[in-house]
Amino acid sequence: MKQLPLLTCILFCTIGFSQKSIPNSTLTTLEGRSVNIQDEISENKITVLSFWATWCVPCINELDAISEVYEDWQESTNMELIAISTDDSRTQKRIRPMINGKGWPYKILLDKNQELKRALNISTIPQTFILKGSKIIYIHSGYSPGVEDELYQVIERNKN
Image: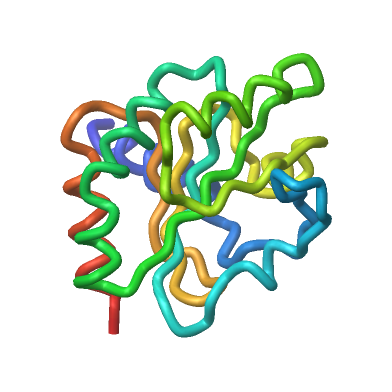
């Protein structure tokens, strides 16, 4: 009987990680231009996709924490972070003022209709994906201080 919870966890973890690569999806730049997510992901480096929203305090905290070390991460691992806003039509007008105020160095894309969010079965944010090319190698949900160190370790291990 003690094995049942372990088997249940393994089953759900496997199901949750059934998506092996980023699906083809159209997003929008801050300037209103449509882009394909596949075209934004470099095959030659690690890409971090961070799904966030303006109303999500843990999302903002995570992006702020990574912003403090982002330049160092880029220098040592040649990685890139793309922050993908999942704000709906009611809160999308808050995105640009927030980004301008924060000065985040990331590429910002908008998942206006939450198409990519649905395709990846994201039910909570922040949700962070680490990709090698377009292949998903790590997924993390939620944020607590220090999680950025865990993300960096995964990036460092997979940079080559």
